[in-house]
Length: 329
Ligand SMILES: [Ca+2]
Ligand SMILES: [Ca+2]
Ligand SMILES: [Ca+2]
Ligand SMILES: [Ca+2]
Image 1 (cartoon, rainbow, N blue to C red):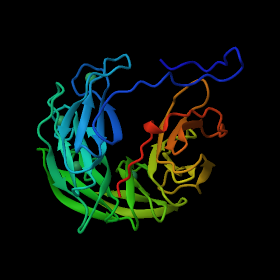
Image 2 (image 1 turned 135 degrees about the vertical axis):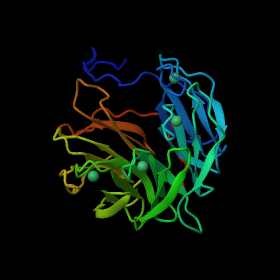
Image 3 (image 1 turned 180 degrees about the vertical axis):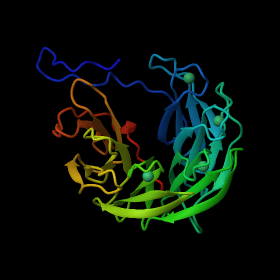
Image 4 (image 1 turned 90 degrees about the horizontal axis):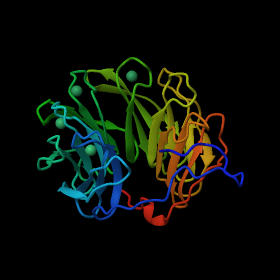
């Protein structure tokens, strides 16, 4: 249970999190996602292991603990994972990007915690694509889940259209003019067609690609950030029902407010130290403010309220060993 937001006897704000617990996974874990793989309504973990070429699944006990990891082989140097039911059997599947083998692996779940052998699908363009992240959406409106994969080396996003039977049809590569890192899906212009926002590591921007239906996209605008953009997340920070963006770049976490038409405000930058790698959103403590940004950088892990409460007042420091230090390049 999340601690409440009252001040303690010393007048300081309490830590939002208890002491860290550690669970072994494979080698060089680089990305984690949560979902229920065995249907017990308790959240489990899927972890991409960049050095051991597998995905670790840890089944949750519903009380913050996890069982011994089970490892499922995937391609070479897996970097990120995303979860969805990709074949429509109502059982959660895992897709991971393999930065060393220019493909994505899909582990189709059996609903009781097992997975079939990985099915691999090529992405990006030769000679080297280095896929770094993947997001799921239905981009052509056929009700079958599709994939959008950011390719760090080939400077594009591959869209793979699901065929509903554990395969993908054609692949479309969308140029982003730079090193595509994280891809997220949202409906930024509220036309009910999913759009993409892509963190472009270098030269350092966020490219917004608006879905036009039928699997087509058009580039809306490149939102300038500073260089080394690693991560992008979507949320509604100011409560106007229009999706906003949070971006982690080398020295900042930035927020950009959506207009609801596919355009965004100029970035507001919050300096948070060096080499920030990830940003995520959540209502970590409902007593304080509507949204928290969490980020990971060389200084550790931090978080802050945003929109009306920009001060950095609840920073948490975690050991360096918890930081993600690998990179898909
Ligand atoms: Ca479970
Ligand atoms: Ca499935
Ligand atoms: Ca589709
Ligand atoms: Ca849209």
